[in-house]
Image (tube, one colour):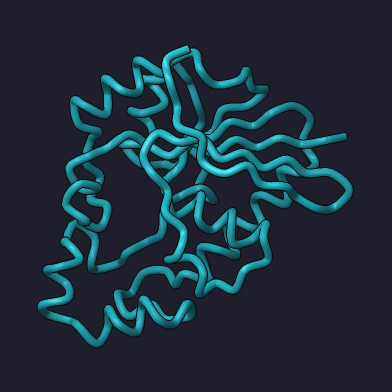
Length: 190
């Protein structure tokens, strides 16, 4: 049996445009329009799941999908940096940001380390390998990065080297204990 998991990154939001740690904001009008125009472009799925964030919920809705939020698919917890821009945090805690970006085990913000999110998402992805049918999930970009790190066996330090553009689909197909990866296809009108 081959398992297929398609991870879709959310549409643009003000936080994303401002390099702001997720603050629960909604997708912007341009992102909503792009997602609506791509509705119907994704393959049928047995299950639709979501990161439990407003922008993932709203992106799924604009794509015409009705999904269930799953805690294991949450974006990286930025702790006390939530809602602040990277520039703001760099101005007040430059050493902490430097450690956080360089050391995947470090979480100076009181949130989650990169290694933690990679392990959490990796466990979820491995459990999805045993499900029949396609799983489609609208998830935060960090979840896509973490899944790619896991599937490719990359060191957690490779997490920040992976870019995940808005409204792209990354497909994982698994069989016989291993995964293959098809990188971020842009969503387009059907």
